[in-house]
Image (tube, rainbow, N blue to C red):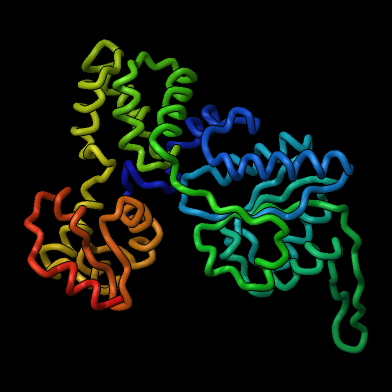
Length: 342
């Protein structure tokens, strides 16, 4: 996969930036108001009963704050949090050593929880339901099954592929929340807060330039802010104005809606090579030289959010909005032809 500036996936150079800009409390967290209110009630009720928080599942596109929310929940509960990921847990024993070390109320955050192996997942069920870990000692006739009792803990799972979670695992999460793309007002507040923390000299118009091109994703907006700051430092005495931000983002090939060269390549492939669609996901992936999963998980969500593409039973189709943004003439009868496919 091409390393894109506007990719919502975590970059290697995001580490220090993400850590310094992440809010620590629900009151500092901007956006996702419905989720924040539900989590506030969940946390306050658990603390009042002196119980561990119910298991929580967070899902949605990457870069929207699932890991940040997990850390906030731990801070609000006043407990420790351990962080791992589905691919890192290879065998049940890997998980057993972690679970047995958790104290009452502690949180285990499992990123990419949909990538847990079936063997690990099945071993996790009794741990989530009964706070017990079943294991077998010995082999053959001498084998003996024992049950280890665990402290009451909380698992917070995060996934970008909700549909790939098995039904038994989904059912064991007591609270499930979907994170949506952020609106422009929330993105503006996020960029303003980040600029203040980073000490960036930026005016209101400069803030809006970055907020509008952040693809509704805080991680992307913070990354753009960092690159615009660098540009301003070299080209504009460190002051970010509307024109400075626009010039910096134009140099980075990020347009006014936050689309980059790869997004436009996907859209142009559908429009020019396949007559606006519908065209299959595998065909689009082969046309632009990407994996189909990458198209579906990374590029497509934001293009769908903008209304630039639509899914049909026969594949993806470009909309009138996509043609207008690309400056391409919209073919006569395209809408009627696509509507027949639904």
